[in-house]
Image (cartoon, rainbow, N blue to C red; front, side, top):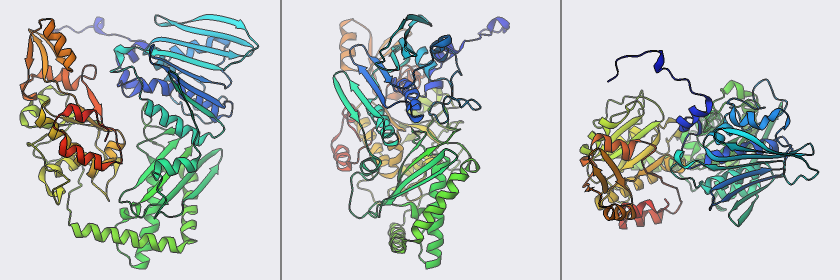
Amino acid sequence: MQTNYSSDDIQVLDGLSHIQLNPNMYISTTENPCHLIEEALDNSIDEAIAGFSDIIAVLFDSKSNRCTIIDNGRGIPIENDVAITISTKMFSGGKFKGKKNAYELSAGLHGLGLVAVFALSKEYSIEIYRDNTHVKYEKKKNNLIKVLEEKSNDKPFSTKIEFVANKKYFNSIEPDFNRIRNRLTTSSVELPHVRFILQIDKNKEIIHYTKKEFFNKEILNNKIENISDIVDLEISKKKEKLLLTFCYDFDASNIKYLSTVNILPVKNGGTHINYINEIFKNYFTAKGKKENIQFNPNDSLIGLRFYASLYLREPKLKGQSKESLENTKDELNHLLSELQNQIYNYFNNNPDIVSDLLQSFSDYRKRLNMKKVKISNSNKGRGLKKFTKLRDCQFKDGELFIVEGDSAAGGIIQARDPKRVAVLPLKGKIASVTNKKNILENKEIGEMINAFGTGVEPDFDINKFRYDKIICCCDADADGGHIATLLTMNIAVLTPEIIKQGHYYIAHTPLYAINEKKVFIPLWSQEELDKAIADGRKITRYKGLGELNTSDLKTCLLDENSRKLFKVQWTDKLDKLVSLLNNVSDKRKLLKNEF
């Protein structure tokens, strides 16, 4: 152990080195380079918001893993080698507060986007056509060098950014194309004058949705029966605006919404979503009291379906991942107060719809009371004393490992960083929501829901979610697969939004590993196992996670650079999920399915 500590121990990293050392700090996840595409895409979308671009294309070549983003906007300025500055100097750009000449409204905010792309790419180039000039810059080691400058009357595009992600920073260098497609789809709704193109190898898609098409497909799942009228509202003040499309689904038992801020999807909502919910709750609570109709305020959100588009000059979005809006209510009040007036006016002018909705909320509350489901939703502080098993973490937005048994839990507890990793052990095979009445009265399920902090419908609130990731961590055998399936089903039925919003993962745990002196290498696949056997390596078979030591558990489960996490994707086909619950005995099969 080193006891001396002097000025020689102090390091000063430049911006690029700091990004490379801590990529998650700048791009939120290193599962794949999807965020890098979005950072470059933000710049093209900003040109479209400003009205200077009507074609935006995202191209991917699977042989070279090359990502290309093209637009026909104004083009990055070519004087003073601006492309070099915005690619290599942190906090550079034309979108900061106090300098709105280039962009009054923009998605990019921090001046980090292209710098992160440059830092985390093996290859990187920018090509620009502007002012009858064609220039191109390429990455050489850690520098961006101008390799071409010529006069040109042609203008096939304005800006083209190409990069190949450096695989040493990512679990996989193939992007999540569904996420990119969804991003382009949302953008096409907000920018109907723009043609969006997604091309993967030779497969080319032209993406264009009207707001009506998008709302019907993404919010209503193309349902046309037993829904209220679809209402469109728009508030515009001082070049800022808020657009809301909403209706009620009388058959639903939850709330569903999507939202964008300056065309950026904000999956965790934030200030504007909270206030929109409050408008509906306050209106119907007051009406219910006046009509002497009994229900809880949150019941008035049951069946609510809406899509909210917000455009702000100075949005405050949480972190580099920009998952929620953090502007204060006062900063949005000029839009939200008028929105409240318009919503109230609509309902006051449609008393029949109000009467139907009040009765729907009352019926829902009666059905719920009949089930006599009781669960505590206390969530005061990070330490929840009523838990007998939970070992919590100190920071909000950490990771909760739900593990199989006390033995595995004990090892992870010793290996973890208590600031960001929480552990909750389960006792054997937990109860199944498909065949057990009053599932929430089950002790372990109750503790799990309380750990999440969200409650369940109708009081479910994703904004009270206490972690960034829920990670199911079971042994790599048939029993482990069954437990993982049971847990997944329970979460899908009781707290579906946790899966829908991308917070639920299953950890791939190894059944075999190379174990030679101080060398521990997990073998994740049969191919890796066969190769290790052929190479004569010393191989250990593990009956369960409890047999792994602390350093092994760090490698397999806690180290983001070496672990294997599978994000569970949502589908509305619950019958498929039930079938899987009854039939899956191998967790590897479970990991290949979409939920």
